[in-house]
Image (tube, rainbow, N blue to C red; front, side, top):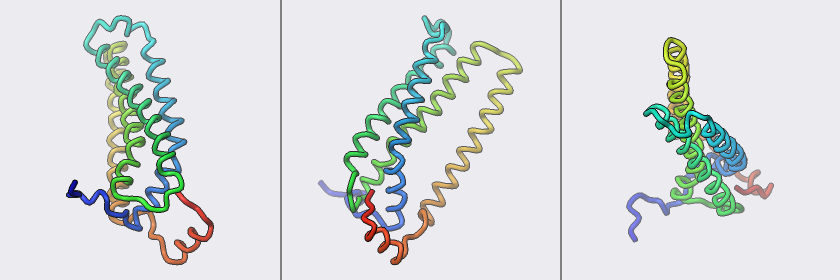
Length: 178
């Protein structure tokens, strides 16, 4: 099968520290994903969802269910990928792309929980309180999104700190692996 996207090419030296950091934080992703799944399932126990009678309650139920499922998938993938990447000395572009998957699923589960809680709150308390909540959460979300995009651009342009010859030799002699 031809490799049109260069997925089997080795990962560049400026991406290796990012890859290592992703792998190193898999256990934290697992913990956060479990917490998101528990929060989602706990929120689904509210009486408004048994049965969900309005469109807003159904939307909240859908977001919370999506968050729980995404968080469970993030845990499953993080465990499998931690075993897969353990002790690897080299990585490909495909490995790098796949390594981001648990974090992306965790991020989606967090956004889905927020959206589900916003829909639930909208259903419970319409009026100026909801407007203030939406405005504050919206502003924080836009800020976080802008910050994330700036970090992505910085990581793409500069990497996470270049590894010089002296540093790479130090890593090799200490026997560290990702």
